[in-house]
Length: 301
Image (cartoon, rainbow, N blue to C red; front, side, top):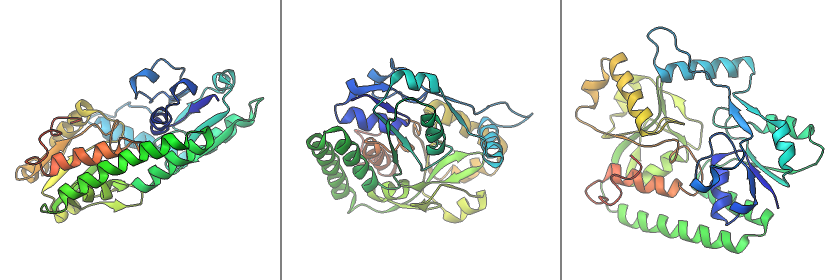
């Protein structure tokens, strides 16, 4: 079987099922596990970071994304010729978010132009349980059901162990920010990961899209912990985004002085609904209860 993954989290699922050798093409964002980075890339981003005077990088990206969506333009491009040369039997894509990855509509348009007729599977996870179902679904299509049971069993064991450890701990009010300019509260699976990690999610939108929030709303939520995981940004980029927020929002620095602020690699963890969502929950626990999770406190953040 020949597989093309049009989603970084799907690439991780395929590899977790032991199908790295079947993977023949990936997206421009796929970078884990490291052994996939030599594979052909069949997408590219059209998002511009060109800034207006005085505009932060985060604000410029947000402005371009919103303008493209308003105009009905895609944020990504598929190299149809490369996709056709790879001749995949299975293409894994998503319908969850036009901002995060290639849309299923764009994939459908691309496959209509191909001579072959590959199977297209679209993933739409909004929770940790959805992730486990996605692993099962890909395993069923690729003859890896037994491997899926083992992978999911291991992930569930880690979830159970984390829940047991955090259940008796104080539930600290925790806000997870998925963007900094404008501020965006977390959605989909993230609030439940905060609960698993021993926190009470605030300024969040469980099982729904992340949403823009005002600074006043964040103040009213009164979080003890603020975890910053901008979508698509690593730790260094997220830290730079926070520095820009500090310069543009005079209330930010006084507000966070009495709170713990943690920066995580959102690109690798919180915003990528693959097997490492469990790692994300463990990292959240290290941010919320560092006194009990010192072994994870420096990992990924």
